[in-house]
Each structure stands twice: as C-alpha cells, then as structure tokens.
Length: 367
Image (cartoon, rainbow, N blue to C red; front, side, top):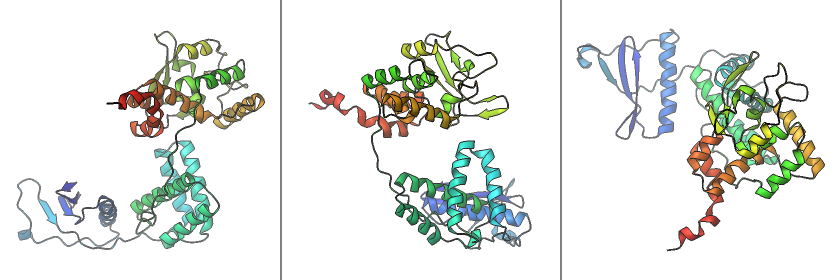
C-alpha cells in the first residue's frame, strides 16, 4: 500500500498486525523488499531464523482490539534455505507451473530454461549472477535471434527467479536489473478482400476449409480453432454464434489463452462454409482431422502450408487472424469491440490496428 509517495507493507506476526515503511518511492524496489520481508517472516514462523525480540510494551500504541505496531524496516538479511539440487528446484517449478500456466506455455518456458541452464552447466542456482544471464542473452543476440525472442528469454528467466525468490532459494532476482530488449513495432500483415477471395477459392473443398474460413471471418487463434466443438456453434441464434470457452473433452481440459470466454458472431460468409460441415458419429470436434481426432495445432499449420504452397500463395494462420482485426478496423469498428471479439486487451488491439485507419480519416483532419 502507499502513503503519500512512500510504499508500506502490512502483515500479521504473533497475532499482531504490523505495518512497516519500506522507505522507498520506487514501486519495483518496494516489490523486491516486500518479497524479502515475506520470506523472512515465513521462515521465522517455521523456526528457520530466530524470532525478532518483541518491542517494549510502552513503545507500542494502545489499541483496544488489535494493536498496530508501526515498525521501522530492519535491514535484516534474507536467509536462503539450504542448497537444493537444481533438478529438484526445476521439478518444483514445473509442478507450480502446471497449476498456473497453460500446457503450451509450460512447454515453451521449459525449452527456454533448458537452453539457459545448458549455458551454465553444474552451477548452483544461488551462484548464478546477473552477468551470467547477460552473457547468455548476448550470445543469443550474436546468433541473430530476433528482439522478440530475446525478450521472451528474458521474461521467462525473470519469472523463474521471481518464483525462486518467493521460495527462498535465491537472495535476489538477478534478472530484474537487465533492461528489456526493445521490440520494433510493425503493422500486422493482413489480406485484402480480393486476397481473401483468392484464399477461400484455394482451400474450397479441402479438410481445412472450415478452420481457414473461421480464422479469417472470426479471428480465432490456432488452438481455439482446434478446440471448437459442435456445442460451441449455436446456429439457432440470429446471428449464429461461435463460443470460445474453457472445456473438458474426453478427460482433456483446455482454456483460452487469456483465460476468458468470449462469443463471436458468425458472418453470412462464414455461416455458408460451416453449414457444409456434417457431424461424424462419436466425434465432438467441429473441425475434426482426417482421422476424426482433434487437430494438433502444428499439424493444422502444416496442412495449411501444403495447400497454399500448391496454390502458390504465401500467407500463414496468424495473418488470417490479423485479417479479421484489420478489416474491422478499416471499417471503423472501435478498438474496444475488436479487442473483445478477438480475446485481446484494448492495449494490444490498439498496438496492432490503430495505424490502419489514417488514410480513411483524411477528411477528419481538415479544419
């Protein structure tokens, strides 16, 4: 919490409510100090460090119900738990990730962590320093990795050390002081209306016609296409609706990337494609693979590339999703509505699509 410009923390200890000033106006510094204090208090409760001697009774303010002790922050060092093998710490982090992250995110994060720890073999976690992380990121940059890739490496390492700090396995987040790589902003690549017609003609009658039309006219992500079931298509409504929502099918659970369900109206052109689909007995998936199973996202992308390569067309699935948002922006649909339809935040929607309308606002700037 904040008092004036100074950050404070509040916690309970030995039945008392304690408030402490962190003596800083910097939010990031305050967060690090809060985490350290949280670890220290938790270790005292477990008997891992000596308890702090109670303040004299005369010094404490008298409150009838619950005494509030306004204590000055003590510069007590954070006591790190006994060394544990890195493999055990990684296993604990993966168990935590299973509860807090999507399966695909977990897999990507594990790959990035594996790559970093391979660069610092046999080094205990608490011995790794900021310089080790910077050398790794520099080596990735020298290997011509994109700024976006460097940013993802930095973010997962930052998240891992932040978690390790909360557990008491490290004394500080060695990644916190490393600047975030700058990612250049580029306008999204999207299809013109003529190119949309060319694309739909190329995929007409193929097994991927349904998901491709849905990516263009509803802006769904690749995984969202793969997880659509017949129950998610409500054709009886006017207009028809596609529901993108969390579900469990045959023991497998899934939820959207943003962990928020949404509804997307089905346009007449998309409905004409979806009405050609016929359910298969015992198959719940709206877009089933040729084997009658749920499409694997990578296999769907591969099938899409094969069809487009044969037709001599250059696009990818992400560009189809951007086509939906971009064409709406060019029509003058508000960025807030685009964000809701696409399952993005308004900030992301404005970042991608706000530059797509200037030429259509030429008359608006004449005064």
